Amino acid sequence: MDLKRLLTLKGKTALVTGSARGLGKEIALGFAQNGASLVLADVEYPEETAKQVKNTGADCIAFQTDVSHEEEIKDLADRALSEYGKIDILVNNAGVSQLNYTPSEDQSLEEWDRIIRINLRGTFICCKYFGKLMIDGDGGSIVNIASTAGITGVPRAPAYCASKAGVILLTKTLALEWAAHAIRVNAIAPHYLETDLTRGLRESEMVYKGLIKPIPMKRFGKASEIANTVLFLVSDASTYTTGTVVCVDGGYLAQ
Ligand SMILES: NC(=O)c1ccc[n+]([C@@H]2O[C@H](COP(=O)([O-])OP(=O)(O)OC[C@H]3O[C@@H](n4cnc5c(N)ncnc54)[C@H](O)[C@@H]3O)[C@@H](O)[C@H]2O)c1
Image (cartoon, protein in one colour):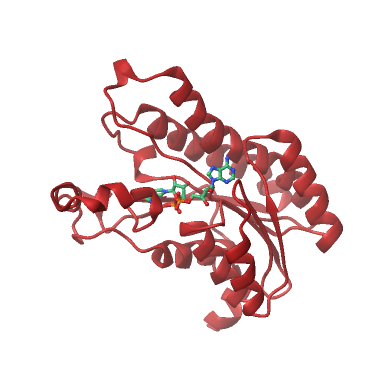
């Protein structure tokens, strides 16, 4: 088995959403190092990621785009197509978490709508427009970043959990529907990661200790540990894998 050949993304074009920082940035850089051309999109212009991707020698176009705005994603798909002529890989990584963890009965509908709009609606909009490009092209591979919070409940995080559970069922539905178009659709469910999203949780030693206690590996994951799994799922190393949720969680969901 030639794993290096199976994992190469040479000749492939990939869109990574939410790629200005954190996990999305790590995924984009990993793709670039393995030969892909990149389309970067983030609600904050992903300038630093674009610079680092170009430093690897990979082609790259970057946009300030909100995944929850249909017109912006439609425009992004048009631009990606005119630049590269095709899209092979979509990673729906852009996401937000709860601004505060107040009891569910006290949470505002504004907060509910904000999270569902970005995490679930945004993922669907990107699948819709980039899936269409893949259907009209030679197929492709989509990876949606869900969460262990889409599989087990988290008290006081109703919108986040519901959005990620929705992403998982969207993944399975599209996998069934688009297998006929040679499009594989999979999800990854990370547990806590060392990114900006969890900075507040890691700042207090007491909170951090409480959160790692139920994790068999006794630590948060690193973005690179998720990016490696994304690379496997978009590459030719996983050509018979679709409709799955891969938990990358230090063993959290094994108990
Ligand atoms: N960090 C964790 O512990 C953890 C655990 C499980 C799942 N996840 C998921 O992983 C993904 C990445 O998280 P992260 O930890 O890198 O977070 P992060 O906050 O570090 O990065 C998220 C990125 O998404 C971008 N973004 C936010 N709203 C957007 C929008 N409307 N349109 C486009 N881009 C937008 C942000 O600007 C940012 O660059 C998210 O979907 C998150 O839910 C994270």
